[in-house]
Amino acid sequence: MSVINQMLKDLDKRQSEQKNSAQAVAPLTAKSSTSRVIFIIVAIIVLNILGIFSWQLYSENQQLKEQVQTNATAINANNDRTVSDVVLTDASEMVDDKQSAYQAPFVAVDAASEKSTIVTSSVKQAASDIADELSKQSSVSAKKPVNNDSVNINPLATSLSSNTEKMSALDAENVENTSDITGRKQVANVAKATPSLTISRTQLTPQALAANKITQAEQAIERNDILKAEALFEEVLLIIPEHETARKQLAALWYGKKSYQDAVNLLSQGIALAPQSEEMRLMTARIYYEQGQPRPAYNVLRPVNYSSNTELQILLANTAADLNEHDNAIVAYEKLIALEPHVGRWWLGSAVSLDSLGKFVLARDAYKQAITRNDLSNSAMQFARQRLIELGE
Picture 1 (tube, rainbow, N blue to C red):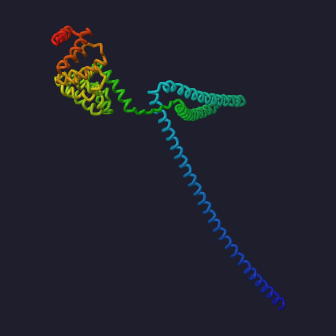
Picture 2 (cartoon, one colour):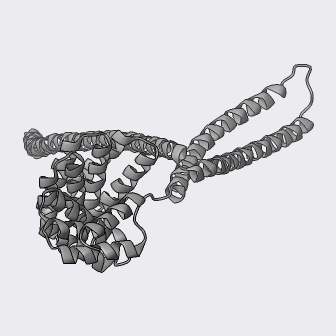
Picture 3 (cartoon, rainbow, N blue to C red):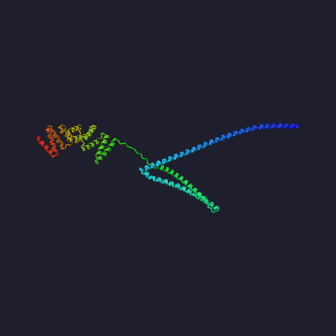
């Protein structure tokens, strides 16, 4: 019985130990499963974060690429537009500027020479690559036995085709680089060769403009282009109404066309602007006197009866005598005698006016002076001698 009891005790002890071990294992197992779940969750979160980060990097990379391509396209377009504008500007300026026309061929020659140099260098490089490849292929074929099938030809053809592709790509790149360099060089040459043209306008003064038009009008008169000359003189008077030369010449043209009243009106306007102008008064008086109007002629000349102008005093004396204003005629003749005492006509005119006023003694002396000058016409000489006889000489 003791053995059985002992065995039962052992069994109970074993069962109690198994229960204890089971209880000990269970928490461990639960603990390990919980940590595994946590680890899996953390791993999933990390993977998600990495995926999101990778996707953001990829999106940013794509956006950067698109931005770079867009900027490159815009830059190329701007460069092309700039080059085309410069070339067009250069072409338009070459039409007017011979210097630019002579410089353009040299620019093209420089660009062509630079392009040929780049292409030549690329061809030489490709040729050297082909020669190296052929030498390698020949050395390999020398080491290997020759078969009936042409096995070694394919590598050579492949090499040649690859070199050809390299050359075409290189040529395309060189052409692009050459065009870019050529465009830049053209822009630089255009900037250097294009001369600067400065246009400045000088505004003429009214006096200078009037002088130019007077010269043109005189040339038109020489060409017998009267209408052109009249128009130019009128333009001068519009610019400077006080311009006496233009007014007198225009009045002379109108007088020559027998437009007497227009000429008188034009001269009257000038006299109103310059009352002391003797020449315009004289021209106006002549027109009146030739038209049989001595009174307006005399009235025009009377304000300047002090003048030392011989023609003016002659016309003043004649109009005064025609109007029987012999006192004024005598004054005019006395001025003429003072200016030209050797002229017999002035003495004769004074004698006639004195004779008309009944101043016979003074008239007789004046007749003698006129005959003494011996420059009268035959009829005037006979008249003077006849009057001396009648006056008691």
